[in-house]
Length: 406
Length: 104
Image (cartoon, rainbow over all chains, first blue to last red; front, side):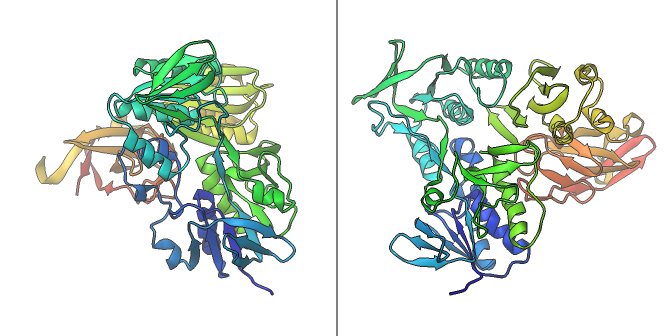
């Protein structure tokens, strides 16, 4: 049976953007967008921020108004799970037994929160934050005075801590590493955020492991590895995501902390692509594979891959970039360097830019309340610019000028 | 102010590529000097609370400092996610050295 249909598994930000971009690229074939969640495609950044603090309605997270999908002749299958991919027959099998034929399959299955295997973690007081339902449940459970313990001082942990604090909760953050944001920024910047959260009255405990959670009627006791305890009404665990690669793995596609694809989003199967949080993609500007868990990757990789599916030949080649908003602070990070041998800092104590060099070449950058520096920093990274560190350190020399000379 | 025009900046203090923020009552506007011409838009991004005057101007496109949303300064057009709502633009005139902006 031949079809020209495009089936997209995963109706989150990346899946939705893929469908939208296919239509924008002139594709007229049927498009099926299948998602387990009951909401139409939405973006996740607000979930730990303005949706959690109740500042916006759920609909504000949708990447397009609800009516958009039908208007674009994109068939949404919400609340539907895909059980298997049959690569030989080119179809997917849905829960309940129905099948959908595909000419092209795009896997945008995203990730699920990494679970901690701790005694007591099954308690209803323990929460994770990945989807709208998680956020709604958390928001309903946090009131002024609620004792919230966050396990994990990564981006999500800190954003949840800040949002809970804004809602009036008494917040404790527990982190095994010596400083927050260890995967994202260098130690000095991590320490800066440590101070920021402490200034807002959050009890930040670094270098601390959790041993067990003991639930009780009036609250839970979080037992720490050093023998200490923290009392909590709510425990939010934010220790990363695990990519949803099972469908791909079971279908014999290469997986390695993500579905492995090239710079065009292609797996080894010419009919199957992967995009978004689940994709371990070859990034031309990094010269290696990486799996990016960032908004812009979910927004732009699908656009590039959709154009490839529509017959184009441009790879997805962008400098990795992400942001985090905590209290009134905006953090942005560009690049994904594996080696940094020198950092240059520009700015003041509360508005600054860090530029990361490796062998004299700009490989990464961090801005704190100085987002205007991010465009030139990304341009320097994309050019693999070799720069004069003295000029870089001179705040009187605009970064735009350094880009021009690079 | 007379006939709806408000002074927001001095032309002699603007250099090519500058963006300055100014308040007219409780409205915040951004004033730009691009290619020798002056333009004005709302200063608060339509996506989140950030001043475009803290952003990055490249040619006639302003990038918000918070999440990199981009607008065409001359028309206010939002150029794509994360910004989907256009920014308001205002007429500008020069009276001597005074840069004047007219709110709707």
